Image (tube, rainbow, N blue to C red; front, side, top):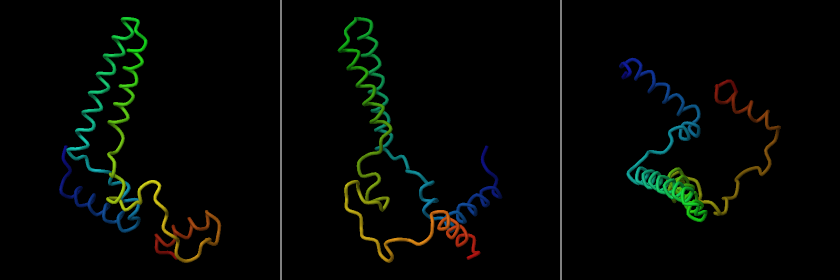
Length: 131
């Protein structure tokens, strides 16, 4: 059932308010868009799982342990392939440095004052305009 115009306007207003209040959280919740490459990765992974399952069943029915173990490995690799992000999906596009890259130096104070909970409370108060 589609949303009414009023519900769509309310949803858009809530999205804008969330983006204004906490842009990092809003970007994290948007997720990644599934393009043609992601669908192809998922299809290849599912095909590998099916092939691995067939090999596993054949290996078990013919008592050939190596064939069953190979089928299990193919199934595992297919699952990992299907659900892992493509290389470069989290790099420059998301603004995060790739793994292993040196971190940029911090500007300002190297040590923040106050406990963890105090900093959280300060952030909450600033976000709500009470600071």
